[in-house]
Amino acid sequence: MRPLTFSKYDIALFIDDKGKTRWSHLLKEFVENGLERHISRQKLSDYLKELCAEGLVNKTVDKKALMLRMVWRLYPIYVVPKSRKKRIEEIRKRKNIYEFVDSASPEKIRKLHKAIRDFEKD
Figure 1: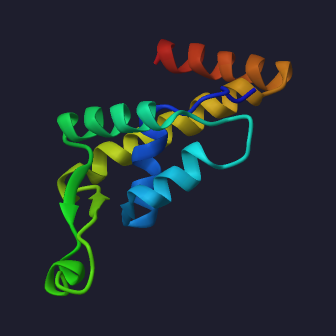
Figure 2: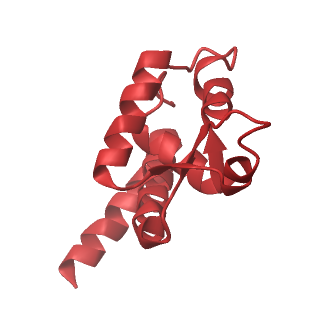
């Protein structure tokens, strides 16, 4: 069963998948998605601040918008730095494992437990 809210790592994975993301894209995906699973604007903002503090996400300005700043308003974009791609992949793998365990049948859980015990013996 999936949790009813998003974690800050779900946001980091979304930003990594998109390449670069604006606040409006994050709002549509995590706040205004019309689903039971959502978060508030404040929580989204807090998660982004935490991700920026951890260094998993950088808040920057789009270079194209910077060149056309007389015409467009400058909005920040969020990107995952290349130096953090490996950490994001580790988070993605763990998330997949947790989702598998949460949705697995009792038979699959027994097989997984047996494989873990065999792995620990080696």
